[in-house]
Length: 233
Picture (cartoon, helix red, strand yellow):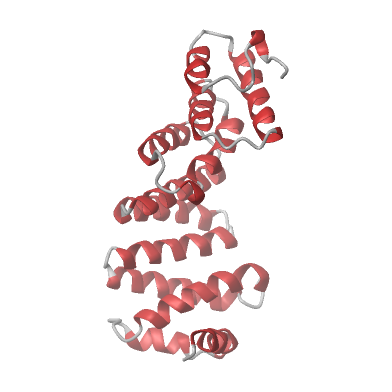
């Protein structure tokens, strides 16, 4: 194997990598080292959470926003399940503070919400999703606005906050109704998910009239028919 900066092997075990990161290299050399490690990990298809944890710390510590942001999907990916979830959250929280682009921050907040949701902390998940949603809406990011709405609804329902979830369902469906014919490829997958939530709660909804009115809209008829067919209703 080739050796990286200053003779340190790219695939150095985590404890050594961590000590190396504290050796006081200049920031530009640290950045180069981080990029070399990432490149080697991708080449060898290495999925070592310890590496990503430490690379995240290193990147955040030198204000390397691009690399910090690149580490976030690795740290928040659902496939990692409950492995080292507290450590991952700690790093994600630190990375969040190194990101200055609002659009990137929204994505980061959303990813943190997903990790909290996988941990079963639905209140924290809701808080991060909500903050992300406001930024997505401000930047008119249709895809992630709809995704955030649905994740908020999911977290609220799992937290047994039916009335709060109901409000987000109404807002999401109202928005999706307007956008359905403008960006169907983006909107339809999220709309199907929102419709499932609406159909699930409509009989228990406080504002049942509004929910049923949205569900009976001709704009959603084909999608609802397909959901009913899939579920055997």
